[in-house]
Image 1 (cartoon, helix red, strand yellow):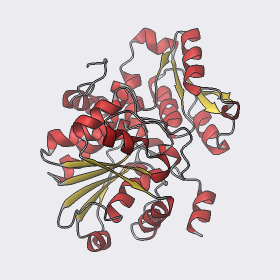
Image 2: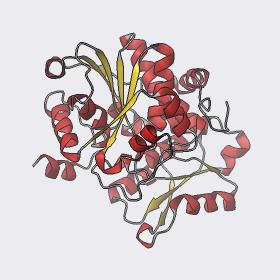
Image 3: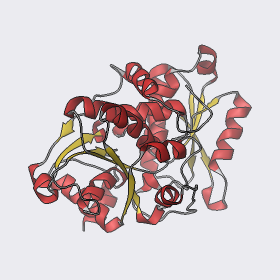
Image 4: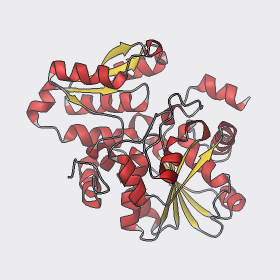
Length: 325
């Protein structure tokens, strides 16, 4: 695997290899359809339900694939990750399953339910003060160096990207060729991995990244072909509050993604409402980004076969109640 960046950082062979690593460990999540959604959008849509993945999100795929490839010596020294949400729980669970010690750097003001879940999977939680402007990545890297542990970033890592791409692999194996694939985008680990898989299995498919309007760095990066940043993304899609695409994911996106869309928080809530009420699928705001992208009608997908990745379902029910109110 090319670890040096560029458009070939992750290939189809890497995703196929990741699928073998995940076989019998990750859930092969269901693919759902909705006649109501099809009638509303004029499409034939297929929803890949990663809200039913282990620990509730696609992140388990990349975390397990990365940890499973450590040498025995690296495994003994453990891993360090930084995340306030799904990546934290994914690395913690993967570490528990593989017997690899995991330390997770989380903000001191992270929701207690997420801290508790991460500890529940057996990980050590190390808190940092983001209010004081402490850089979590530098803080985590310092701990990893001190311990001789391996740093597992949330998206900009070849084994993580390859693992995430297995979601699209499974979807297309079940549906056959698709015309479009809509994928949520934060740091683009899921998007870039899925785009590589989709273009291999369904040549001619148009892969679309969807991100919140309040954190449109990926869209601007894609349009300008220059890496853009957004310092403090303001959106209910907490899983997409990344500041920029990564050294590996940006070239992969440029090489494999057809287009980008942004959606408002209001559109996200309406997409969540549809998924919860009509399809009985509990999906978090970030997980509804791709659905909102199709519903927006900003791209003409009428008459097309469309794949939609529902990335996760780890939602704070009290927050969801306020959103729906």
